[in-house]
Image (cartoon, rainbow, N blue to C red; front, side, top):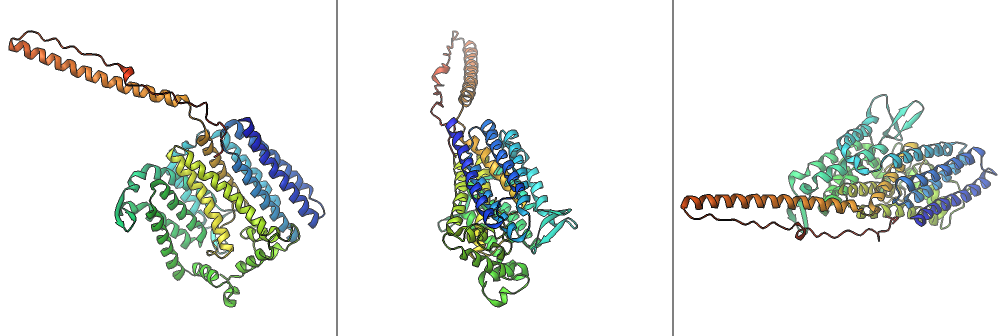
Length: 507
């Protein structure tokens, strides 16, 4: 246990060391030395991460803290690139991002301390659904919602803006996990067969149809392809985990593809995204406004100019790429860190995703299995859509890289996502206690004793009835001997050994 905790602390300290080297190297090339305010905020963040490590060790002792170390490394790279863009443009986005990071860590610490059992979320499944839908549709409220970059996915509070869809994905994940856990048996029942596929029954298509309509509504009303695709893909993935039927994935893919094709022909903003993906270098499409492909092309050239090893921190031109500190931060990272740098970033995401999948496989609770798999798939899908959109694998969706892109709402929501995975990993790695075996023994013994009393009472009634019949017939009295049942012959349950369980095993 102690060795495991020390190893987690060393991982965090290693991430701090890499970050410090990058900060001093970058500022030495751009401004001569790091600003005093940035150093103070970095010191506060370092203290908060150490406090977070200590709180996890105390309140979530069996959790896999490697997730937090990877998240710290990704956040550090993101803030480093945001500061690089600030140095070129004279802005202060990195300072705000570090303040948001401090708030995200405080929220995670509160979650680690007060959420001892994640299963409490199951009690508020429909409340989570209502909150998630309200957050998702709140940008459509007149006077509150704001349209930025052609998508109406923001709400404005004074000079500040918030993206409520980032928090909606957490609440909808709670609802989806609870709903699918309660109805997995009905949804797993197969209907007609189509070749090797076992299709679901027609009456079981209701949930996926409702979620499809909601995702199409987000696409049409809010002009946001990424959010609608993310929510629908999250539900379909959790549906597959709950039922194990590949037919659900095929039905979901075909349904969303059909809806997107129809939307691309009816609504101009969807068609612009598809045209920019298919013909990015067409001069007419490149210079078209709105819906041109200039952002994608500039991001591609910025990503390609980094080569294998990159231009070096502080030596590239990341601000040539539009939205270099938010939507296209992956391209900015590729320019200054090269192919090696972006591969390292993808490897960090892969470590978090692999840890989440292992947690989902190890956890015995069905609700926890669905929730952890849904959360980690949401993050994985978001990374795929961002990287795929920048590299022309899929149309550009407008989502941001988790933990790296500038934006307080995205940063806090994704940190809460990582905190929930850590809490679930604590339950997954926790050794089975003797209380479970003792409870099972007591319940089994109680059932057997009840059965014995019922058999004895039935035998006594039969004996009394036989004696009464014999007396009426004039025969002699009949003595019924009932042999008591030995309870020890029924219950011989071995005590479960927990001494060999690894107390601090990683997920």
